[in-house]
Image (cartoon, rainbow, N blue to C red; front, top):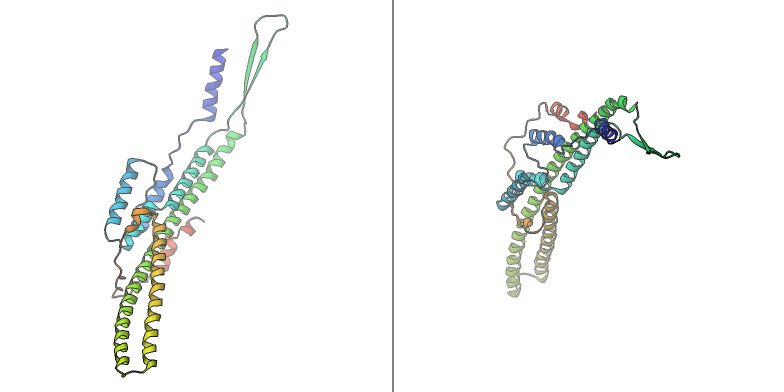
Amino acid sequence: MKHRVGYLCALFVVATGCATVDQRAGFSDVKAAVETRSGKQVAWNLGTELDAQVAEEVRALLADTLNADEAVQVALLNNRELQAMYAELGVAQADLVQAGLLSNPVFDGTIFFPISGGPSKLELSVAMGFLDIFYIPLRKRVTAARFEEAKLQVTGAVLDSAAMVRAAFYRHQADEQRLELLQTVVQALAVSLDVAKRLHAAGNITDLDLARERAQVEEARLQLRVAEVAARQSRAQLNTMMGLWGPETLWHIDKRLPALPPEPLPTDGLEAQALRQSLDLAQR
């Protein structure tokens, strides 16, 4: 009876299969596609030594004056939402592996006790779906297509995130430059108001002229406060997109937007290139 039980256990292992899922199998394709299209690296944080090196790279980027490319790189390495998408990619990979396995068999056992005495009799049986074997190729094709779609969707989400981070960086940089400009304007108008007060005391300008000078100063101060709020909001948004918190948010940037290129960017063949590299068309 022991030998029979052993044979049945061996049959269970062979029939159902045992597979180890490599979570990073699909991520390698996403990583290669992102690096090819954007020149930026992505990393999936699974608590390994490589992840510790990535965290150190993020700290090194934040320690220096941050530019747009570096902000995008920090976001691709550190954004929590992207990490969650990579986990969903691992689930899709597990589904693909599961599709190639047979369903678990159904075990049945019966014990017979003779009325007239004597040893009991044990009968064991295993039942499996015969058609399940023929469905395996179909299930694998369907899940493989879904897996490829998941990789393209994650790649597109990563590239979209990179574009949004770059736009958010330039928006914050513009807010900082506008804030600096308004600070200079307020200082200049404050000096002008002080001169106007002296001229008014000397009788050289009217009360209306002095009131106009004061109104200009107050309006400029109001615009300055609005600019300060906008700069804080755009910085907070950028911190969220880069996945930063606590001391990591103390980064600094050049508060001036880069100069415009002397020549316009070439547009010849741009539409054809966009169609060739479109991930949306690749999913269809």
